[in-house]
Length: 346
Image (cartoon, rainbow, N blue to C red; front, side):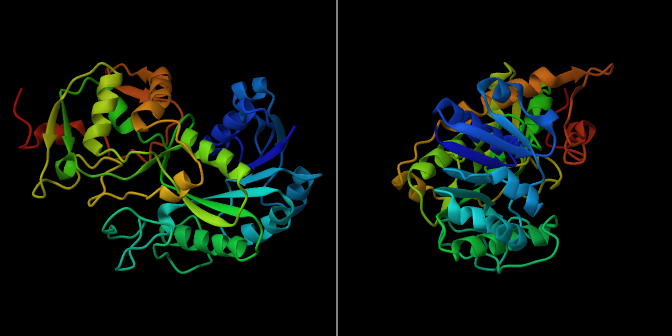
């Protein structure tokens, strides 16, 4: 049986990869620090949990053990992390490292974490310019993408069979944050209207964890040193995503499409990028990858799980367990929405 070792194996990406590989008959070992975060279905399917800190070199070597046919690293954020991984990447038959579209810059040098949003003229290919490699704190908006570039370069320059996958807004079971909550909560609260900035035309390409997992399986069968974008076959607008979620929850609301004169805090949903940010996935398709499904198909489980976790407060509004409240701190100001001149009095 072929062995896959997934570093960061209990997160949304690692778990999806494990499900895909287990279904295909792989032996899958998942490395993470907290065994309590191992999804029950993975344990039941035969995944083996290895309690270890991926960023501890001795622990990493022990987890790698006798070798792997596929090594997947979901926790490589810096050049130092890449150098820790390198001896094992050179030994494994195929290695996949999860990166991000945050590495890309537009013609003015702006990236998705810039103070001013980037303006890409069209779908972003893997050859698009990136940030210069950097060091320092990779947990900052300025440091994240630069450190990712540095990690990519260490691995790709090594000659090892490492495929770098640049993902976009990842969604799926266990995603943190679950961006869909922006619309799910509104549907549960039975909001009569939905405000959408930029006429609802903003789009920021989502990446289903299940689609990313399918690409990892393809790469395992075609080892090589390369960069591939990973995103869903469609890049739905915010208006489309709102509609998908409302339909799933049997709710109807009046769409209010705001123009550039509206208060910028109104209708500013998590996919509100104008012009749209879209990844070109032609290279992945040419390798033989086939997506599991489009956004509407792959997001349903995450929506359903959010609903299952939601609890109504005494005031009749809904809350969901385990959600980072800071991420959504300014997302549900219903009084400001209702007071907007764009909303007709009820």
